[in-house]
Length: 399
Image (cartoon, rainbow, N blue to C red; front, side, top):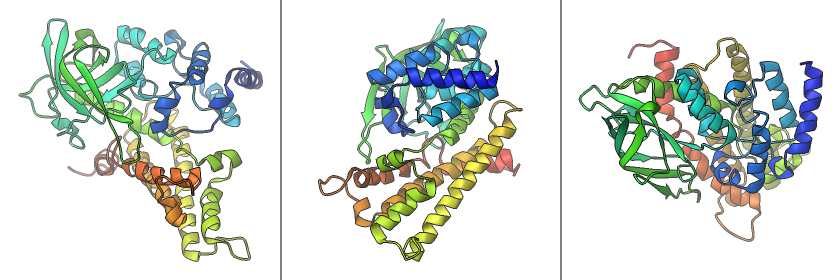
């Protein structure tokens, strides 16, 4: 198709089909779980799914949009123009879907991928356990093969969105006598069964995006083993590369004021600093120390953005993401954490308020964001884990 005609058609379709309430620019993943349960979000997802645009680059054979890179870029640009958030999001699209497309059987792709595209299947991740977080290979949740099914017993923790999910992908131990990195299998299972119990965990930020998940003779079908029996560690690591690649593309939630004014990133920090500590005769942040902090943060964020854009362009020829995604997870999570802390710090005591009618919504959100984003260097693989991966897989350093 002619790209100019495609852009015009895409723009017209988005204007007609994207609800105004979905034109908010960005949403933090903790808020996304509830937002995507609303009627307008479901309507937006269903409309986009008819064109395959919940997964624009996935093959049309499985319900995806089948767009080439230029068409996909145009769609992204037109969505950004009207500040449309993705019509669907989550671990199905970002993690297990790409993994099944790459490593699953044709039967598994045919059975699972269309349900991810349509939104019928909502997924959560069963990796971490109370005694196996950063040392994930130490997991102890057992799966015993009994005929054509696995019987699963154990516990997972930090299962994001488990209270909303109807499917889970999980790492389970299928050979307890093997070395810890071996004897692990990768299975998917239905959450809608008597043997699965989910308990949300309330965080210090006030939200409950994470859960504990308990298995008491839960069932996973033998046909839902992804990859080979006892070789799930390889599949699990591959999925994490897709997760980290998706994390580098995610946009942080903006203050409500930021969304309304659509300010450049520098002004987000600068305007906060000027509001709470004033400006000099030249219109700069009055406090030189705070000015230096803002400049350093913005320079680091822009450098990461440009580097990510360059690597994404270079990787289009090679296909799936590699170990270098750990660099972006490490740097990106650190900058997210420092950015939220800086916004709170620049607001002074107004950036440390939990609940009060004397403070505006941005000030209240600032405290929650600061607390919430302290976790980003932990979930999705801690910074320490990312450093180990970079050392071994990117730099080639010895164990």
